[in-house]
Length: 379
Image 1: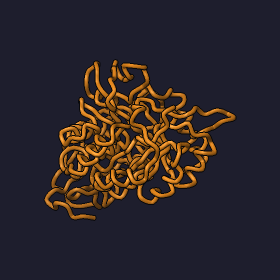
Image 2: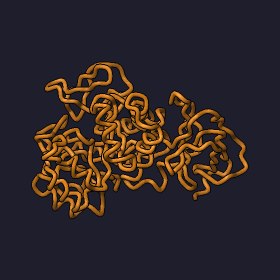
Image 3: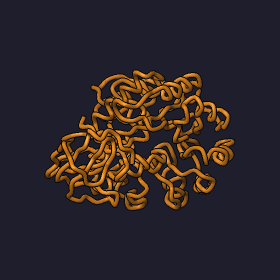
Image 4: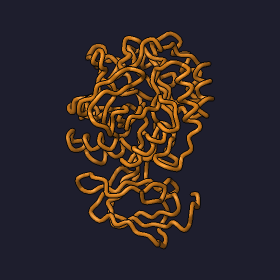
């Protein structure tokens, strides 16, 4: 464990602390410097009596918020994303790019490389959603910028990003995709996305090294009793699966069935939020395309396809618990430890264990935020 700043010693008292075993236990949580610590002599207290103490959330798939987008390719936008997410209890972020012109994609990667953590949520990676997808399931992605899987291009983008790309999405049925998986599986997590793959093709991609499924159910063939497709292949594997639980993308009954089918060990809650999140209804943009937002529903202005969500991950987690009736413990795990594990950052994020960052959110019984502690500092 890093020593951090020994002057910052804290105890979060009397809370119901979410443990790595996925249970709530009434106990005190000790913090030294930036890290969770063993019992220590404290000089600062955060009272959490009657409250839940959960790890800071980890969103590995969202595009934007407060009129900013990862694809803007600017430090201003990345910082705006980090600030908004941290204020809502999401303390580690892996924002997603889109299928956009190559030069804009490179600019987004360079901006991420240049970002310095320290204020707002930590930028822990990039989710490269596109351009290696299937045009037939493009969703809100621009068809003219879709490309076949290209190892050389990926390596150039990864270099521009300073190694920050943690997830690269692709449609495994497209030309060259299987060879791409073979070549990059030891460098980056590969996610099946925006695809028409059948069961056998998806299973082969997973066998070759794909270990993640992008927004399960969305932008892929449905589960059919004779043609189970990507969903069936994912069920028969051990890969992680993303779920957008904003109340728009997936019916609550299907969410409940998915938790039974995959369990809370493999589901990763994501927001898939776009720049309208945290803003009023109106006209926005996603991946260079106009989007109309009414309430929490975002659709392409032309065509009407769902265009991401307008809901942050904390609100998605609340929706899962309050409206979809998933156990709170399961929802917390799927918004913290699972996403951290799925992109390989669980050595520092995702749970309240000694030696990990002291990132915690104190919630009252109605799941409202009472306080946020980031790297041992009350925000």
